[in-house]
Picture: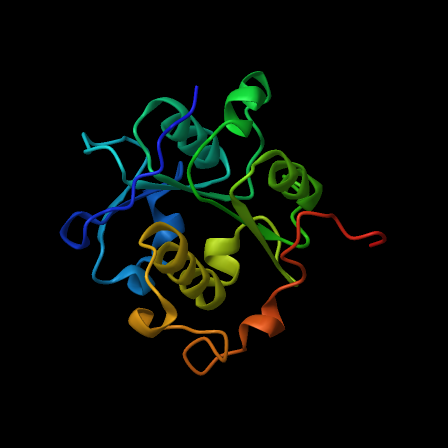
Length: 191
């Protein structure tokens, strides 16, 4: 089953942040100001085309929403793969952002590389020095990275239209190059 890639209209930009703990997103949501965001485990009734962002167990739910629930974009952080639906995931026709901590000991970064290889329209970002709880460990990196990805891959805005965070810096913090390891489809040869 393939889900259509749906770019939202400017007035219908809905982002669904999924985690078993609502508090997971408290430091990230300020970076998503200006977007309609729903936070929690329960999925509200949404028009097709929303962005599903899932962390850990919420990532499994986000994958289901991408496959069967009308999501138009998918962001997965530190989660496992729906192994029984790998063929369906591989056939997804939507942008997917994989955001992982380099030192994740719950869902090791190798899972992210595997997903990135499986998905045809994915972007992988590995954050150095972070473990499993990316939204809490590195909100000043995670928030701008999600916002930048949503703007360029889901909203499809050109760089001149984006504003906000950019490759030269994250709001006065470290540059994107300082927090990332690798954006390719290939895992590193040696760790």
